[in-house]
Image (tube, rainbow, N blue to C red; front, side, top):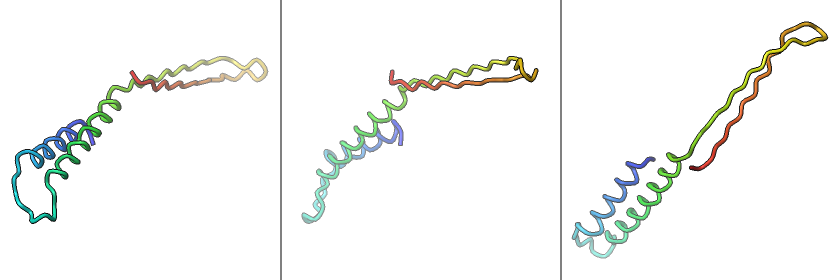
Length: 86
């Protein structure tokens, strides 16, 4: 689910809460369902924004040297991932 899904949930909830005026006989409260969908839309939207704004950085370092004992080339690689929230 992304930002668009959060907005869509919010819009559908607002339509159910404020624009639809149908009598369901007391079995289904469309206003409550609309408010629940609006709340879920806000939560999905905020979570999506947090995940989009995350900064992902990867540093890869490769070092090649000669082993003095055997005379072979040795390649050493190190990878560092920094996942920070911006």
